[in-house]
Figure 1 (cartoon, rainbow, N blue to C red):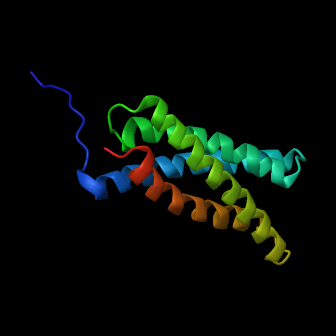
Figure 2 (cartoon, helix red, strand yellow):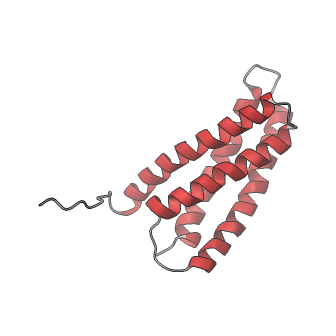
Figure 3 (cartoon, rainbow, N blue to C red):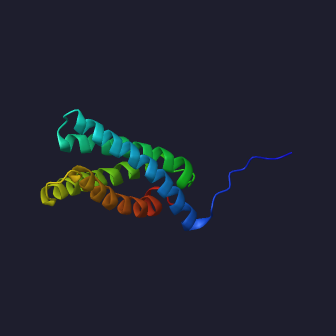
Length: 136
C-alpha cells in the first residue's frame, strides 16, 4: 500500500521555492487583470489597485495553504495579512505611479512600471510574511 504524503523541501529554501511558484501564479492574475482593465479603458491607478487586490488575494490564499504552514493564529494572522498588504498596496500603487511618471514613452511602459512595482512589493512581502504573518 502506498500512502500519499506531501513532501516539500525543508526550511527557507523550500519555503522560498513555494513562495516564488505562488508568486508567479499570483503575478499572472495581477498582470492579466491590470492589462485587461487598461484595455477596457479603466483609469491606470484604479486598474493597478484592482489588479493588486485580486493578485494579493490569490497569493494569500495559496501561500497560507502551500508556503507558510504555521498552525493557529487565524484572526491574528489575518490581521497581520491585512496590515502588511495595506502597506504594500500603497507601496505597489505608488511605485507604479512613480515609474509611469519617470519612464519614457515606449510601447511596454505600463508593463515595465508594473514589473518594477511588483518586484518591490514581492521583496517586502516575502520577508514580512515569513517573519510576521506566518511565523511558526
